[in-house]
View 1 (tube, helix red, strand yellow):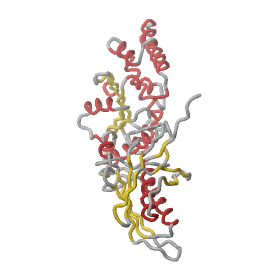
View 2: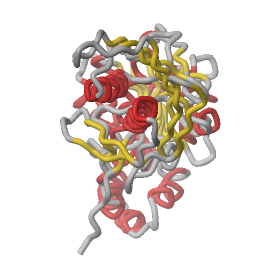
View 3: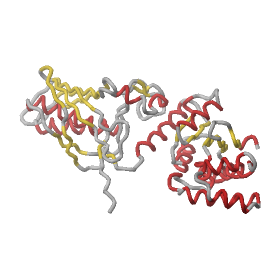
View 4: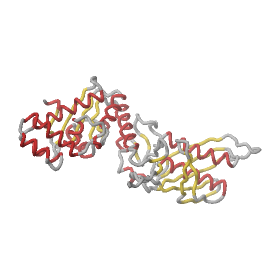
Amino acid sequence: MAKKLRSGFTTGTAAAAATKGALRMILEGKRPSRVRIRLLTGTDIMIAIHMCSRPKQGEAICSVIKDAGDDPDVTHKAEIGARVTLLNSGEQGGTAERVEILICGGEGVGRVTKPGLVIDPGQPAINPGPQKMIAQAIEAVLKKHHRGGTVRTEIFVPRGKKLAEKTLNARLGIIGGISILGTTGVVRPMSHDAFIATIESALSVARACGQDRVVLTTGRRSERFAQEFYGRMAPEAFIQIGDFFKLSLVSAVKRGFRQITLAVFFGKAIKMAQGVPHTHAAKSSLTLDKLSQWTLEITKDLELSREISSANTARHGFEILHEHHPEVISHVGRRIITSAERFAGPKIEIQSIIFDYDGAVAFDSQQQ
C-alpha cells in the first residue's frame, strides 16, 4: 500500500503562529508550547512554538519551524519569527477597544522592487493571504483577553537572505530575503501550488515591466541557453515553466503577451509536440514510441524507426537523428507550435526553439 503523503504548512501560517505566540506571551506572561491557527480554508491547525523571549514590557519574540510536510521546498525547516509589540493596550468594561494592526518585514523577508506582483513596490513581500491570517491570529488573542490597541508585528526569517538565493525572487524583483506566501495556509504534497504561483507572478512582473514577449523554458539550463541566444532581452522576459506547458501559455495569453517563445531540450519538445498539457505526465517509453512513428513517416526507414524506439532516452534519440535526419527534429519543432496554438489560440505568435545538449540551436521555427 502506498504511503499517504503528509501535508505541511506555509510560511504565512508559520508567521501567523509566531505572531500569535508572541502576543499571547505578552498578555499571559508565559510561553505557549503551541498555538491554534485558523487557515484560510476555514479549518484549524495546531502549530508548535520553537522559541520565545520577552526582551521588554509590551514586547515578545516567538518563532516557528516551518514544516512543508512531504513536499519540501527551500523553506522547509526554516525558522520563521515574529517580534510583536502591543501599544496603547486597554480594557473597557469587558469589550475590546479599537484594534489597529501593523505588519512589517524584518531580517530575511524580501522587499518588492518591481511592479506586477500583488504587493506594491517598496512593501515587504508578505502576501495578502498571510497578512489576513496574521490579522486573524491577533484579533483572536485580543478578543479572548478583551483588549484593544495597536499591535505591531515584524516578521523575520534568520536565514531568509541565504534561502532566497535558491529561489527566483530576485528575478521577480523581491530583494533581500524570501516571500511570506500562502493561498490556503496548508502545503499539500505534489500540489505544485508554489511553482504555479511563481510562474504567474513572473508573467505579471514581465508584463508590468513593459514586456510584450516572453521566453518560456523548462528549467535553469535551458533558460541559460535562451538568455545567451537572446542576449539583449530583459531578464524579466525569461520564465521557467517546468512541466506546466498548457497552464503557462494560458496564463501568458490572459496577461496580454503577443509573442511567446518556447525554448526547450528535445525530451520536453517531444512531449509538447504531442500536445501533453503537463509534460511530466507523459511516460518516456510512449514519448519514444511517438518519435519512432514520426521518424518512420518522414524517413520511410524502418530500421531507423526501430532504433529510435529502442533508444535509452530522448537525448539518445536526438543524438541518432540530429546529424543525418534533422528533418525529424524540425517536425517535432513545428508540432510544438501546433500544440501551443491549441492552448494559446491562433492570435498569439508562437516560436519554438530546440537546443542540443551543448546549447546550440538545433531548430528555430523563425529560421525555417
